[in-house]
Length: 319
Image 1 (cartoon, rainbow, N blue to C red):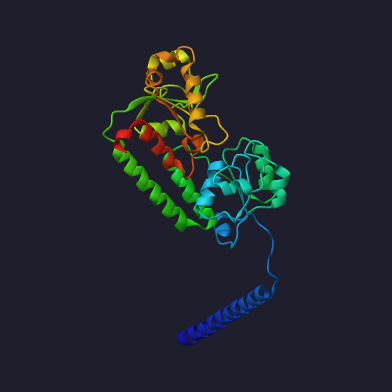
Image 2 (cartoon, rainbow, N blue to C red; image 1 turned 30 degrees about the vertical axis):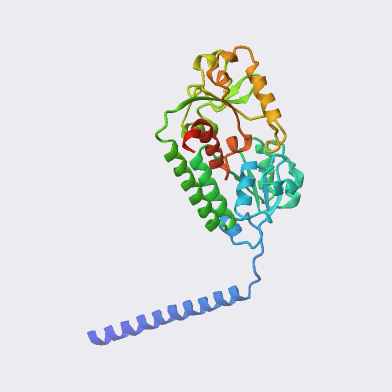
């Protein structure tokens, strides 16, 4: 009797399990049929970095001069459809449509162009950037403040644009150049230096600035290293007291490359004629170094050119 009950129970369980399996099988068939016959979803979403990198041709707006240089270096010149008013390198950047800057964005035109990516430096125009994002456009803020973060920004840009191989190659070369330069100046005694950002009122590169790091790496001792902030005001009295051996400054000329020796000497003479400056060692020994402003202060792919310019001016004997 016990065996009969057990057999009947097993038969009932088998029938119940069979019904469940059949039901699941039919449900799966229906789901497959519905999915296969359903129309494709073409709803638009804000693209991610990987989505953009897989696109055949990107449409890019760069409102950052340093980022424009990075994009050109990565071979993305055909993808750039607009740049800032200050994007002047390489020369081809001058031919791109001008769209203002990170501070004065031509918002309507940027949205009209509907780029895949908009690169900015800082978020000083936050309201306009939010409107660009609201239009479904990806905004990328790249704001490097150190040499290492410049390298990282190139890698990030390569990742976003599908140019990782190129980015890794560029950064590898830059790291090697940096190491070679540091080895050349490693045994040299740091030289007291000063960098003039602006003349009146006198403004310099402080310890939180990109320029300060370049000067320090190049074998300089920035006399404004104890000042506060990135670009503080600096008194003439403090300048005379700390007595730099080299006075760096960017010449305020429209084109550094075409600057004549007469123009350069005129700029140096103006510095020499300032009250009290004749007490400064750099002035007395005529070590007023005019640096191309963009390579000295622009945190982009030419960063090592800036480092080299500082190092060669401070320690010409090792080059």
